[in-house]
Amino acid sequence: MLESLDLSTNHLSGEIPSELASLTFLAALNLSFNKLFGKIPSTNQFQTFSADSFEGNSGLCGLPLNNSCQSNGSESLPPPTSLPDSDDEWKFIFAAVGYVVGAANTISLLWFYEPVKKWFDKHMEKCLLWFSRK
Image 1 (cartoon, rainbow, N blue to C red):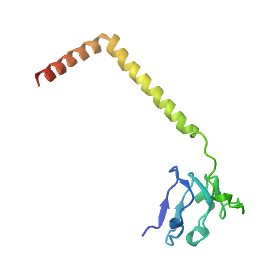
Image 2 (image 1 turned 180 degrees about the horizontal axis):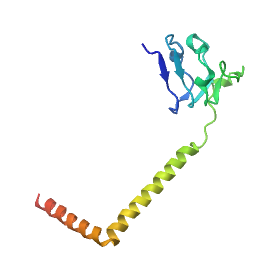
Image 3 (image 1 turned 60 degrees about the vertical axis):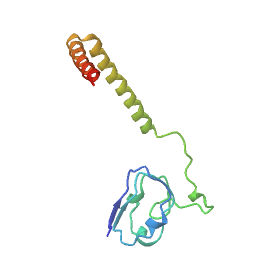
Image 4 (image 1 turned 90 degrees about the vertical axis):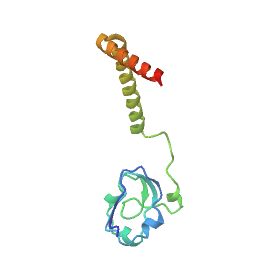
């Protein structure tokens, strides 16, 4: 039987599913640092979890958090989506820079460094001969 569920930092988005709220045997739940929104269910085990279980989800409201839900029903609307997270953008930029630097180093070694150039030419010639025989 599932007694502990840690879904923290999984980039989950949306409301907390009613199926999750109906679990009665959870002793520990961690939904922190996702992109969840809406009212935290006030049924069953959800009343026993601390605010730490929901931190980092700015769109959540209701107990055990200090921010109350608005009564006009806007708590069920997702927060406005904008550009991708800046962390994701930086990861992409660093990956692209790393790829370019690695490719440039490989090409420069093959082009300018004589021992590597000779080794590469020798092995490339062997490969071409092997493929031409088949």
